Length: 633
Image 1 (cartoon, rainbow, N blue to C red):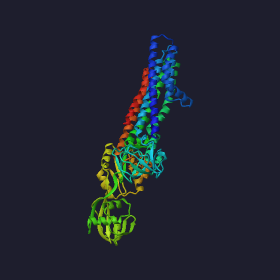
Image 2: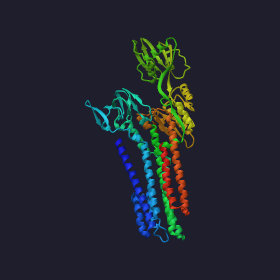
Image 3: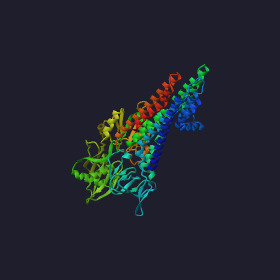
Image 4: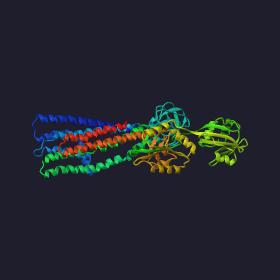
């Protein structure tokens, strides 16, 4: 919960403070040792004792972790390499004809600790980039119990319990408002900054902040299954799904490090056997070891992906793993569902065309017949004629599958439905020039006229399609179960490249299969849907994107990327974040490998110094980590 997160952050800050103190102390002791060396003519073994003090202050943790790794059979990590390199540098001074390297050895360890400090600071910033998620679960809840309001742990709340949410408090569990009106701040969940008004009967989600009125809420989910907990679980598990880049770095480090260690051993032994000076070649081999540490790659690349996932979560875009972030960056084709994705999914009457009765009377008849239906078309017809409470009698309501509804209104048979229903009752219907769902009305077999019902296109759908094309997406496609004319009108208005209408769920999967076969080489396809009835297509696409998923378990389970609000424009935002993250990871990879290879060659040729080796390892790590931190923004 929130207090656990604060405890972790406090512990992390304590570790950073401890590192800074240790680095500062070691730096002062190193300067003192250098001054003593220059002012006093001490024997080599006494100098070693003086330099061992700052060396152990700076490197005790590194030496300890190296020993533990060795004990567990995992020797070839950065701690082991740094330990061998610095101990070797300390030992060089005792070889015949060799100059002591005590200051260099201490400085290598000191600079390594500075690199570790930067890594911890960057890690802390990465975690803080998603810390708004860690704070969305409150520590307490107000539970109504035996007529009293008691403060309890949110984990104690059961389904159907009544809770009270006061102004300024976070909603502890998902529930339905039974009393009160208020505005909710949903930014931590959906990334949407505009407050949402709620009242009796509205569903609210855990993690939202109550801004104004007191709300009495009936819990519909327990704490562990509520929206905030599910989101937290999703983000915390995201690091488990590694990208190809991260897997490559892991494999690279496992192969690369042993090879470089073997090369360093050969570099110190072979030239000596051929008559070379052992101290000189040992020094070069030690530089080789310092340079060989793959810290910059092992740390900075995962950090960049972690930052990208955190940055996306702040926008209300939840990515289930860095592998999906990488897939988003290679997006070539975006396929949209229509209803609820590009359109509002809210139907309304857009035209009324009566034949032999008044417009109002036509709506009156249709609303009566559709009185008991929950279908969106029926709801839109009732909304268009809200004054339904009159003295009309409606009897014998019968739903005719795939055609419409028939009922007896004031003793007369009224049918409302499609053209097939009109043909069945013998009514002489005619087509309409307007686009939308046409509800024909007949009374006693005589055609009364028709009503046009349309789904509204979302305000930012057109901009979303433009933004995707501007981002280099080569194909935008729409799949819909609606009739051809409706699909064509929406596709043309939004500027989509392709559209397919009249599709059943199985047909949508087949179309996505075709589009997958036709995508560019090395490119990916994303399907964007509501995540509830599009689960098969979401699962088949390279990247399944569920939108408008606030409070929807089905959407969170079925998809790879979850958009917590219903704005299609977030798809383009997700692509931009993914591409920026991949660009930063690649920059780190090429920069680190390039610098290391250059200094490795110079070390083998005897041109490089220990200071150059330190830069090639710790300096490059610090620069790569700083570059990775750009992904947080």
